[in-house]
Length: 424
View 1 (tube, rainbow, N blue to C red):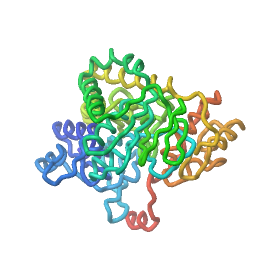
View 2: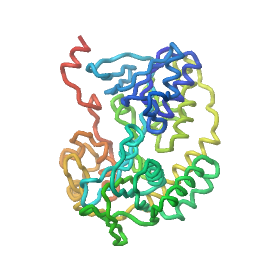
View 3: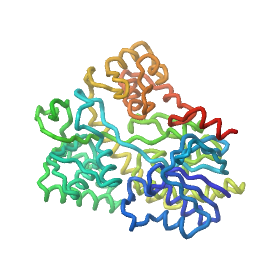
């Protein structure tokens, strides 16, 4: 039994481990040079990830890092590029563990020199050991802000401020769920302690109004200077490969993203395609790991034509989902009621909020139509960053979004010659 797993973070690693234990052969794909995803990423050659060890010791594991997966098909075909051009391979099942990425809201003054996503700063630190110089400000909402800030402080970076739209009372509301996840609570306290020791000012209940001349202006009219600014408002699932396979999606208005529709273990609307981890909704790495463990018995049972066993650890899963959904509700409740119409909503094309609002006022409620009128989603990122924002504008106008952006056959640019060579 040959299974493809896309993504080597906690979800993909857990799925691989459980599938191999049940006798399946797995091929893992990851576009990063090393496996581990954003959570377990390592840089030194003296360290090995759990998957690298598994690949060395098991003949049923093939680990393909530095390989971009371009497309997946419902029949089990995976298109990928490992550096020698596009090629394809057929599998009996495909498990997508593609993770998530952080985005920030449209803010007047962006794009701006020195400003990026907070996730980008963390990825540079963890993946390549690159750190920003000068003063750094981290802003947006949620506990990820302090995680990034604490990691930068540990690396010797001068972080001056963390600006969090959530209030302390919002975090206290999550405490009942957090008690069932000791690891989350401990990490929260540890990051706060590290920031306090470093003299980092953490501002709660404060939002970002605009960015101008290397100054972050808050909604309380405070100006905070920075050399580098990391912004993160919320996370969005990576659904592009599920879309190429034709999996059904639905919009989650509380999370503010399009998510793949799955059952409790990760089955999608397409037979043989499974989505685990953050692709099921933003639930954190502990839930991602658990979802990888839960999907393996279902994949084996489906391939053998048996009924799958009832998934276990339902109590822990309930706590993990409860905490994550509670956080999304608090972030949604604290989102600004109004957006500055002059803010850029699509950085790739330079489209502003006012252009999207005008298109929506004409009655357009599907993103592909808005894309034609405004060019949102036509840029290099293919809507990864503007799609959630445009959908939010449709909802703000009182309309119901009727469909996500249309997905190209390949999620990344591929030359015609490469496809012809592989087909020939």
